[in-house]
Length: 439
Image 1 (cartoon, helix red, strand yellow):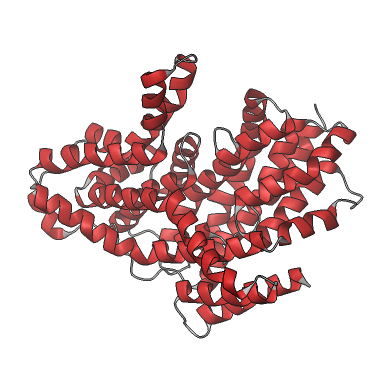
Image 2 (tube, helix red, strand yellow):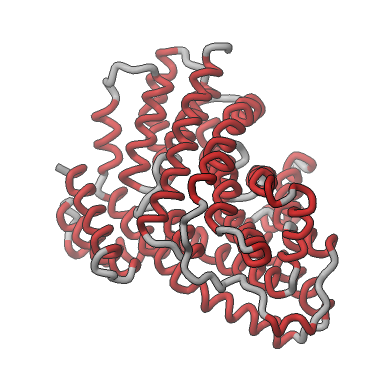
């Protein structure tokens, strides 16, 4: 009955947003309240779930999204994104541009948390779209597919790292095997699949559009543009290495390393640097730069609300215990453990929305089976990681980020984003099973 309630709730959510044109945030709140009541959550406890669900999202990604929007807006309006686009076009040509986008997304995605990577790379996608009049979805999907795969398959992302620890796998081997499995998945879900999306029309996209009035300022140089736009990537690489350089750090040094390693602080530092390199250094006044940041915050306010709405629904699913019920029901299915782990993570992902929650929930159930079956733990990490990316839809914050940033209809968001995620997931488990034949 609980699973049926979830399915009906998701259908109601889709109908409210797509047919009745109700604001997505309000739809999430209403559906979450209805689902909570039907799942037996006390009426008095629902307000706390709403507040906590919003708070969890704000605590985890809101600041990162805001800083990313500020950085992206300045990168776009200063002309830096356009400069990067010119270099990429020159290196790969318009015919092979998608492969360049895929490679860029994968390289950036390995050290970068997904939400940071998304808001950092989207301005580059749009800059190419504006300059060369190419379809936004056609250009963007290869880069976002690469970013998604890195997020779900590869350490040092939170979910793979947690799974490595739970299964007693080896971080290095998981990363190497993950790279082997990831490349075919990205190629099929990126450049190949995106060829079918050329006719998808986006709505007006103005968030990162360069204004004509900005022409009075000099365009940043190539080095300045690349370094500033990708600074968060290099900062995260450095801060990831620091604990290994100073393994016995304690006291003030340990606190400093912990402080600068935070993604939020990394993004803040990147914005501070960009304020000078793309703003003050190019002749903009501080007021003009701050006006750019204010505009960026206004533009992404509704996106943050929608993502927060998905957080409420997600918490209702967790508090009701649906994921645990589902996991228990699937334990005795007679299939290969790797496929079972993938399938379990896939189903939980479909119902809950969070890739991380799906992966960790499935891992908790699969641990006893893993020990009994003798399956390679590194491959189990990858199988569950692939399953956790299955068919992102209305209960996933990433779905709404993509839909709102690209200004797509619900139908076209599912046709492009959701199908791309499904291809990544299916190709992932196929790759895992092939590798399993040889190790």
